[in-house]
Length: 209
Length: 209
DNA sequence: TCATTTTTGTTGCATTTGCAACAGTTTTTT
DNA sequence: AAAAAACTGTTGCAAATGCAACAAAAATGA
Image 1 (cartoon, rainbow over the protein chains, first blue to last red):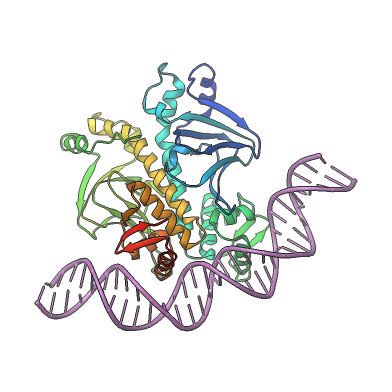
Image 2: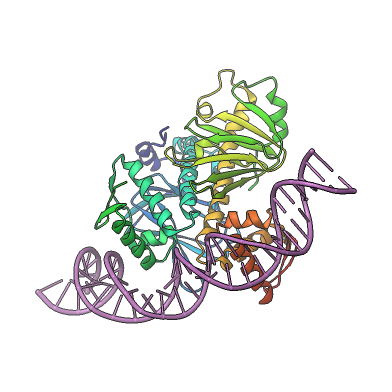
């Protein structure tokens, strides 16, 4: 099941078609958007990587989401009355499409290609987003650090079709993603190595079981 | 932002239109479907309540999802290579629509109303699903039981527009949903009462802050 | 209505996890 | 090339959480 979303068509059609849609570029570390109020903003990553970050009242940082090519994110996906402020931050130089969700169901006045293409692709993009959120929930509902790590490594391994793979995160960020303390995670990784479950070289992991 | 999905139209059109779609009834406790292989099945709750449950190798039960009116669920939303077996079980007597996701993008041969209606509503349903998954992730990434409970209670309170509300779960299931030990959660609830944060009568909660 | 099953409430104890702190690397910036 | 910042690896200790177990209450169902 492949996405029908074709970036080339998208970008080509952009200039002379829909004025409801914006494409912006961001350099690494730049804030892409903040989730302040319910503007029904929807965003799609065209290139690069974007993290969705929460800072709670104590200043603790959590990576809530991590978006790459064709991933959708934005205010529209969050409950209106959340207390936390969320920030979308470019992890790498990135290109992002912005528009308002309301304009999807309604046809664009000019009935542009851009708009049509987007509407058609949207449920597919949403579906893929749901899949990745469900995977995340799978991990987060595991009861201890060890099984969180192993589940995640399994997923990566199956994605790569290899027992060896490279983490898409630094260990600091991996801990954030799994929502566990970094030092506790490092300790558990050590145990996993000692127990012969995994091998680890930098961020390159090999499963041994 | 309201869903355009109208159940009445749906069910009326059902009988004499699309043969790709099934509606089934389930009694409480019955298994609605199991997530065994990737059949691209998609399900929508028409009435009642359905839980998505995982049993891990040790027999521990976790409620992965809880679906009510208009919620979508099904294999299509899960990564193909998950180790766990998932079960969708009717928590109450329920009515559920089944069909195969592939038939959405392709037009139904007969081009039936049913099918059209569904396609139009689908991205809206997906969107709502993403919102609820994101809320869940918000809760699960909180670092301690207290903040998980409080975040969840806040969400319920805001949903109801009241400081008092009734939990949609038993406490046993709430612990499952928050992915914490039940006794630890009960202990924390007691602390919250002692500290004057909440009042609790059965499954009826009042926020005091 | 009575018996059975499920849920609630509670506790002591063991284990896991988070926190704080720091030194050594690596990466980034100037 | 030097300085600053971020990341890795490690540890002792405190606190939070899970586990096991059980009695009481409530819900279910025969």
